[in-house]
Length: 304
Image (cartoon, rainbow, N blue to C red):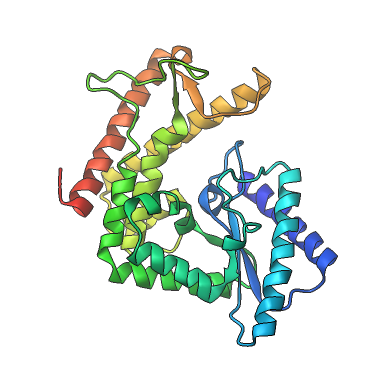
């Protein structure tokens, strides 16, 4: 539902922006990335987007296209911010000239990330591997996706780097099964449920890239991995139930901050506000996440 609303707003914003600027000089597509690209937005939403436009041979045509799409990106991102989709703190938006480029330049970005980047570099660019065409000539994003999949297939070390990054996110559970929470500050006695479930998103992304699955939604990726027999029936059920339970708690927290606390929604859950059953469920969820991280580690890093 949230994705459908976001898509409708984006459609209207782009139409209004084009009406203001006039027709685009060439084919283009507006891309969404990160949680929006995965159709997993919650009530805490910022912008992760970009523009890809067709390759042009003439220098003047290239200059005209760059100028037009720069203005279009500025308008679209500004309108989205006004509509409640705040600017990305990391500037991963189309209005950043770096992410408003021709198809060949986007291919260069992905080539560099896949063949030359260190794990640290990829930590800041992983959202781009969940991109999806949202408006315009989607043949351009299809070509970019095909280039991405073909490049990943030829570069096994890339998935190793992604795995190393995925293992940075540890489920918040200690050695003796105790929930690990913030010890001080604004979120004292709380843990970040978004960070806690990030390993499932990473797991689905890495295995999907390995097996040529082009879908971006985490649950869809997991289902496709199951149908390809990458996951057993039990592994698939465990992953889906773990993801759904964590997402359920995440939405409850965000709704609580808006309605009961009258604050901006966040992802921090105070362990003291959880029932005994919820705590027990969370401990099992985090144990499962840890087990799937071990599976990633064994398959892509060769260690246990």
